[in-house]
Length: 142
Image (cartoon, rainbow, N blue to C red; front, side, top):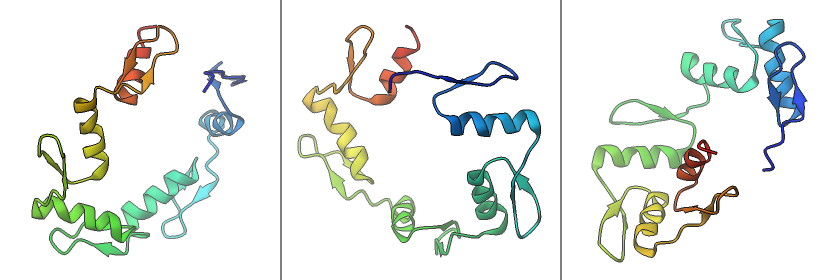
């Protein structure tokens, strides 16, 4: 997490932290699309984009459909969490104020309001934040 970007594109000067990022970026200049969909032949620069396409366009990789709305999920646990949006179930309660949450991670984030904990300090100025996303937004001012 040093922020170093030693891999630079010779074509446009954009810098990357790793060689893999540079390689994927260079495909934008060359037009190379090495990943092909076996179903329809559409080609992609990144394997992750092919995987997204297969799931969205061809319904592959999502064997667990929601009985309420039909949306399909790759994992049974993700379907279970999604089902709570239909039932309104909020199984995770805050011990301090009683507020309830669908996901344990959301309760953990809420708990920071009670504890005052700010575990994400800025390396530039030392100001600390409760959420990593708030720190990232703050770092844009430096």
